[in-house]
Image 1 (cartoon, rainbow, N blue to C red):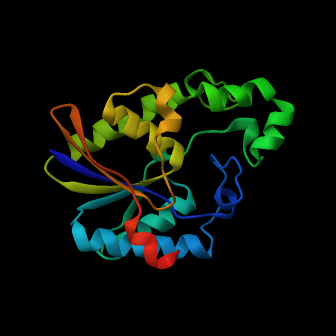
Image 2: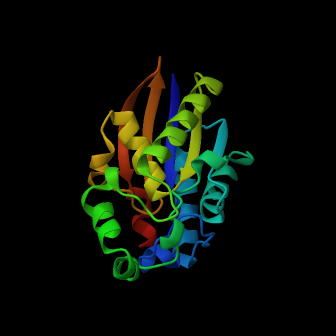
Image 3: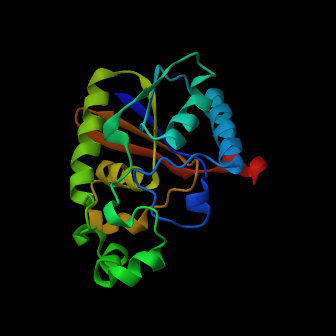
Length: 205
């Protein structure tokens, strides 16, 4: 069995004021840095991970570093944990994107499993790379606890994969900044232990 501690990165200005972030390397803001520190303290109090993996984007890496320092571990960037590629929507607000691609944006919010982002990635493609990464890390760390630092979109897709739910349920899973999710893998199947836990952030709100 492998225990996964799946964390979303802390707040940035682009998720405080909603913009499609994707591969844009937007840093944590002041609130996000405080959230990351609180997350590190929470993980250190409850688990003993042997490795920390992160999306290569700095907002996820910085969140992972706030956890890693408690264990003298190095953060290992994994390209397959990067956020969805938002293509031509990257950097736009939903309203700005809707003005140019009304049908595509409507599909993203009403039928995400069928959405086609101009120049971007589909949820189906994202799920393939995300779950391949989970399977690979599960085999590499059999019997261990590991931390993964990701993003709202990829985390939701991983959690849907863990639960065996389709991508049409994408908007039915919440991922707040610095939320902690815990799941276990065993013999190719999964058990979800906790979801979107943010109780460690009460003191920084």
